[in-house]
Length: 507
Image (tube, rainbow, N blue to C red; front, top):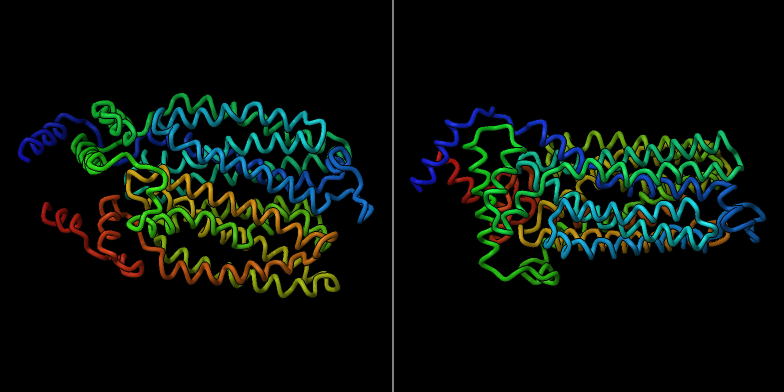
């Protein structure tokens, strides 16, 4: 113990660094890693508007025999929205062995390279099948990136800043969604029924993998991953390069990371199915399944299918509404890091989920009057904008943070894989079902489907109240202890752990 103290004292006197955790290189690395969701955000925002474009439907399907208009059939809507999402499951499943062997940085770069052929296949697709194949291929890429980037981000920042940075990374994802809808709106207004109206947005998408690859070459590797390979000195140098505070503080953080790694090494190498063992299942359900549940909130109606069902309602220009809706997503995402760090995870979730439930119920009820009262349709559109803000402020930001924060250190990779995989399976289910219950040539519920999602949100709210703990500022060791002691989720805030007591005694 005295030797360790003398070492840290030497480090603190020899170091000439400040007391802030921030430095320029850490900000660069976190900014670049935060681009991991760029491709996902763009493509998911892109497919809704172009599916509503007459030129796209004309070239990829032809006229809808049931409606006599250039509108995708319910069958084709289900295929174009849901089938490619199976690729995200494949991508997520591949990430654990790839990250374990090559590290987070090279795994992320590999996902970007995978996307390069896919985006060009979509751009030059000669028919509907080829376009869907391009979407599936690209989904493998961004499914992998989604499973890698949050954990990578969590590794690069101190525990007390984890929520702010991991949720802040969503800004790039939603900003790319805004870009997609703005480009679609501008292309539609400029080129009308010409093929360029959907080719231009696809051409912009084709540039994204290259834009993400170049800066990622210059980021550092995860210090935690380096420790798993026994590269302690490399981990120390990396941690020193991304911290602005003293060498003593760097050594303390390294010691904590080393303690976590030493504990992990005392056990067998983690197997994927270990996350479902009785001692881990609660953490898997809380940390990994919330990403899946966010798909059941009703967000699909105000994002992916917004242009389609707002056209049905006759509320106004669906492409303009898509732009506004994505700007609302961006507004919520920008606010999320500050809300999570100032108010905590649990209060943000419970309040946010309650508001989403209220919006689902109100919008669904108004849908019964939307056909005969245009004002009701406009109110539904406005409620969808509010829904987008609240969803990204609460549900979306928490669902990406929890898989990086809740699992024990050695099971973070498989838990994130579980989260992304189950999330995309749920997305596949919802995108298959929603056209069948909302489309005019199917069940024709339209916005009444909000009521179905309202019922699901009520169940999610109850589960969150019972299972979602407050993890703000907690280290991995503290979270391990709280779960080991079976402390109820509603008692976590302010609960004193042995790590807290040791820190107090040291002071």
